[in-house]
Length: 146
Image 1 (cartoon, rainbow, N blue to C red):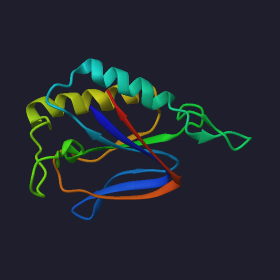
Image 2: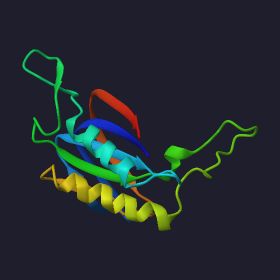
Image 3: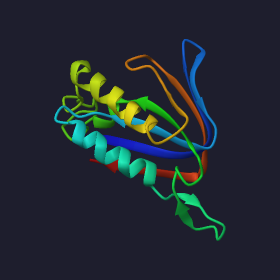
C-alpha cells in the first residue's frame, strides 16, 4: 500500500464538476492499493498517517501531527501510484495495482479506520474520473509505503 500525503491549506475533489469531498487545513491523501495488500497494511499506514509530524510548531519546526492540529483528511483512491515504467516503452504497467474486488474493501477499511481518529474525513469516489484541487502548504509532500 502506498500513500502520497500532501499537507494542504485546502483541497477538494470533483466528479462531473460537482464537489464530492472538501477539506481545509490537513492532508490530501492519494491512496494506492497493491495486489498483495491486507488490513495489516492499512492499520500500519493509518497509524503512520495520523501521527505523522509534518505541521509546524511555535518554533517553526515540523513537530505536530494531524491529530495535534485538529486537521482534516481528504482521501482519494489512485491506482496509478503502482504504475511501473521500468520496462521498455513509455506506457506504464498497472499489474501491481489491486483489482476493485480487493481494492474497494481495503479502501473502505482505510477510510473507516481514519474516521475513528480524525473528526473530518472526506473522500473522492472510488474508480471515478476525479478532478483534484489543492493548495499545498509548504509545499510538503511525503510518500509512505506499508
